[in-house]
Image 1 (cartoon, rainbow, N blue to C red):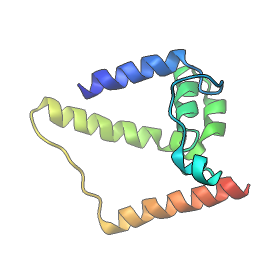
Image 2 (cartoon, rainbow, N blue to C red):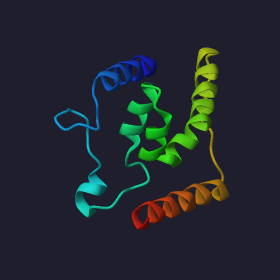
Image 3 (cartoon, helix red, strand yellow):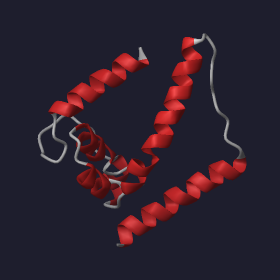
Image 4 (tube, one colour):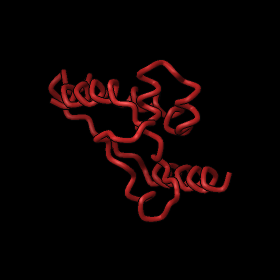
Length: 115
């Protein structure tokens, strides 16, 4: 079910350019309220560019998310592998990992709004 929803979303995104206005893709509520970029801003545009093989523009849209993509795909693969074997897989990151991810997100947000 999750894979079907992901495939449907990717198919819709492939045919819908988020760089152009007039689409049904959601905007960032944080940016709408503050005018600032959050760590995920540009993620939809980045995914569109990756689907079309334009990695340079994808890097420009959100470099942090693009750099994290292989790690996320690895985690998705682990989840899928365990699910196909009939087991639940829920990684529980320790406090140090959680604080590290939060720190990277905060630094990324500050840098992309200042530069």
